[in-house]
Length: 426
Image (cartoon, rainbow, N blue to C red; front, side, top):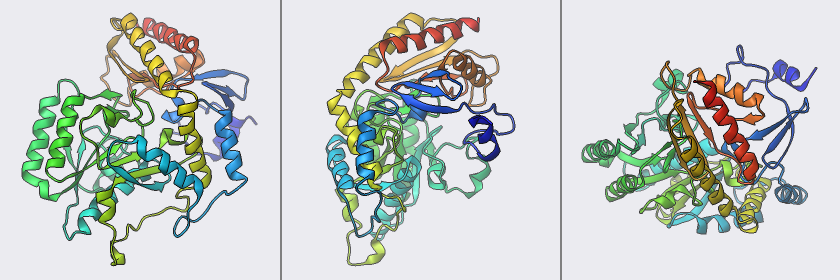
């Protein structure tokens, strides 16, 4: 049997209706922006393998550093012990983050990074003898698939079976163009009525990914953060998707005038090589857990917290930002995206097109309404796959989020396939 056939005998895939799904494409190796399948085909990875890959698949420097670490120390309990990769990664990461971040707490992925932040926020108030357990979140947000992360995400098909089990959240509009005044007004009402109950405001800075790559207005967003801070509410930036250059700067929070109290990271943290999550906090939050009373401890951890191999991958990824001038590559991709928009923006098959950093998103006109289950998704996915491009549309929203190593020629090839697809819909 082929690898795909063997897979279907034993594997349950994420976000997949296994009864109707096509057999998975079996990939045997990757190099740069390209992936190679078991049957000899090659594919351009236009979405960075679920938004994680930064420097390219099987990057030799990352592979070398992972091998060296695995040959030295592969794992260590992180309660009462430490190791060089964890310390070095924290030392390198903190100066890059928005002002005021001073402590790093390691976990395993984006969802757990968010879970940690939510628990930190609630216990921050509890340790001071106060009860603040509510959160403000944005409509259509996505923060992960564990229960806390689901609770602060927008209610959707992803969460429907579990809605009755999740804690209550106060939702406001996201400050996307046209919604700025409503977002501010809804936030102000909550702050007037419930500010003493609210532990934190959690948000995806500048870009709501799963909601369809919705780009938000930075000035209004800054004002919202400032209003929360003025009410003493902790601000949590979920940079799991937006971090490490995706929106242009190293972190999307750099678009704002006011810094968050906590930052959640994963995905690009290790260049897509290893699973690792990080939650950073301000010193103020950290000090609220310092006490002779052991009950004020943050009781959270994972078996693979600060895994040395994963931390070594994170260190190597940050080193590559300097060695390969990675943010210059981000800028070059952003320039190409902007030029493409000028070329195709008026195409009659499009209802809108937008870009920020390396993200290019376009909404396809459709007669059946929009949404995650729109038939455009499967149609476009198959169309692009047949032309050796891997995408994963969000309903009728097609987007590119390529690895930063992608060549100009490869990016122009993807643009060409987009135009062919748009023309095919006329």
